[in-house]
Each structure stands twice: as C-alpha cells, then as structure tokens.
Amino acid sequence: MKKIIWTFGLISGAVLSVMMLATLPFMDRIGFDAGQIIGYTTMVLSFLMVFFGIRSYRDNVAGGTVTFGRAFRVGLLITVITCVCYVATWQIIYYRLAPDFVDKYSAHTLEKARASGASEHELATERRKMEEFKEMYSNPFVNVAITFVEPLPVGLLVTLISAAILKRKRKEAVGGALARAPSATVTL
Image (tube, rainbow, N blue to C red):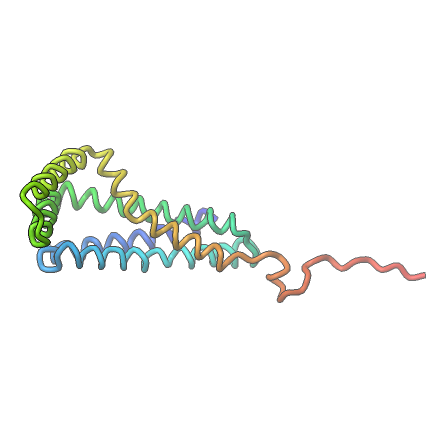
C-alpha cells in the first residue's frame, strides 16, 4: 500500500510542481487571472493520479475489492503527498525565484479594483488588506499553511468522487454473484 501511495502521490506532485515552474517565467504575460485558471486546471489533472492510485490499490493489493473508507484513505494520503510537493515547490519559487510575488499580486488586485470603479476609500481599504496579507504571508508557517490549503479542496473532491466510483464489495467483484465459500452438502 505504501508503495502505491508514494508512487502516485509523487507523480501527482511532480506534475503540479513542473507546471508551476513551467508557467512561472510567463506569469507577466499570462496574468494572474489566467494563471489561476491554468493552476487549478493543472491541479485537477494532477489529482487524476488519486483515481489511478485507488484503482491500483484495489486491483493489485486488495484483491479487487475496496470499501469506500479504505479507498478514501488511500486517496487522502496521495492527496497529502501531492500537497506537500506543491508546498515545497512554492516555497522555492516564493523565496528564491519570485520574492516579489505578493507585491505584484497586490498591484494586480488594486488595479482590478480600480478598473471596476472602486472609490478611493475602497481602494485604501483594499491596499490596507494587501499590506496585512503581505505581513502575514511573510511568516513561513502561515505561508506553508495557506499554500497547503490551496490544492487540498481539489484533492479532497477528486478523492471523494474516486472513492465512490471505485468502491467494490466482495459480491460486486465476482460479477454480481454472492462471493461465499461453497457450502457442504449432506447426502443421505
């Protein structure tokens, strides 16, 4: 079980990390809004490994059967490994490759508010929120926690759906027939 969880978790995490690193040089051209769409689409695609991991566990370890609870646990562990990979990659990007990320994001947020017709008071409030966010985000523990929570809901949703689809009880595993040992017959 551990091998399956680690294999599929690391594959999923690698897909997410590689895409994050690949889009980083183009963020100025892509923009934050399109970057978010690309990011969440990549998350969904990488979390497909949860489905394949649960299926591999069911077919190769559990003898063709798995309960919803066991399938959910396998998927959850794959999701956690994926999220840890995502966090590790983001920490490298944030602290080494893009330390001005929050400043650029703040400028984008303020420009978006200005373009939507926000008043000076609303802009000042937004500016204050962004300054508070920057201060909070500079704490590595908060940074890690916020980053971990970004892909987690996507992974949990894919895990729930995958566990529901892939659960298979003993009787379902043998073509619908009841899976039981043949009973001894007594002849008189």
